[in-house]
Amino acid sequence: MKKILLLLFVATSTLAQTGIQFKPAPVEKTFQEARRSGKPVFIEIFSPTCHVCESFKPTLADARVGKFYNDKFINTQLDVNQPATQAFLNSRRLFVPSLPLFLYFDPQQNLVHFAMSNNSTDEVIRHGTTALDPKTRSQTMKSRYQQGERSANFLIDFAMYSRVTRDTVSNIAAMNDYARQQSAATYANQTNWLALQKLVLDSENPMFQYMLAHMDTYRKAYGAKEAQMVAENILMSSLYSGRGAQFPISRILQIREDLVKVGFDPKIVANRTLLPEVNAYFRAHQTAKAVERMENQVNSNQLTVLEYQYISRLFNRSSPDASDVPTVIKWLNKGLALKPSPQEQADLYYELAEAYRRGGKITDAQKAAQKSMELAQASHIDTRKNAEQIGKLK
Image (cartoon, rainbow, N blue to C red; front, side, top):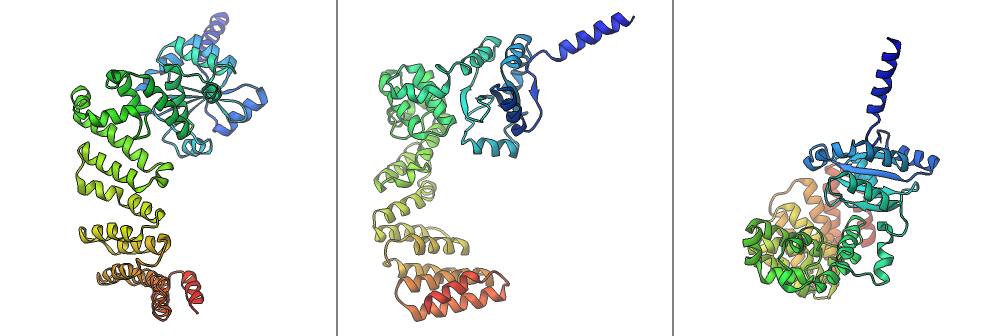
């Protein structure tokens, strides 16, 4: 009887340990264990509501997969919805384009490989094997690209790695090279449609320019809503990227025109491109154009008190000269006419004082600053910025 119980215990223990043994500890403790053992770390980024992630469970529980990963890695899973996971990803400057995402790190938390795997035991083991090879893992892709590697599959992988590592410059370069390799006749095929969906971040990419000129082709093949969504994502990712903050006004106006071309209401588009346009005019020292653009927005919409305060602050802080001051004063008076709360009035008068100061009307600036101080005191809010403003006007 004892032998039977012992055999059952051994069998149960063996079954319990098949598959990848994921450590439930916080990710920092996982890396501490990795540093003690000298093993790299495998992390599956997943979501409990992701059906594709669920479909991987039998594969990750496979005995062969488990033996490989448990021998070679310290393993853990991170729920993408958890704040701790987001904090970890942000600390490593990593982006999750789709789930599940396999990430492989050295014990010092440096990403050495990534994978978006097919759901098979061989594929999951293959990605782990690649992660262990210093010559072929993702970490080498940038140097391989710089040395001239340009196969289509490599460019696709490098572009995705660049997305994961938030290296937009490399992503754009890789996808431009990829697009130039493809025949225009293949731009709308399934493979390149997936590339547009997942990899293209720049509206000047040749494949996307082709898409803009042939929207009906994509609507018929993939659906009107889906085609519009992909076009919108690429245009907006260009507009609101870090490089977008330096676009000349001509590029921003082109994006505005393209958003209308793919089917968006011109008024909605004008709202979305407003601030990039105004800031581009500021960078070009075209204050009159910036004023005209914002004034058109004011005249065609009913602004709230907070919106009048926001646009006035924008011009007070960013305008390259004082030629906008009369218009800013007009906006602030419109905001005051809406009967705002005392705290809102304090903020409006603060900006009014700034506008008068910029325009050289120091006496008027002092009066507005004093009014702002009195309203701030009555509202029991912090008056340090008011005191500083009054001090500068003396």
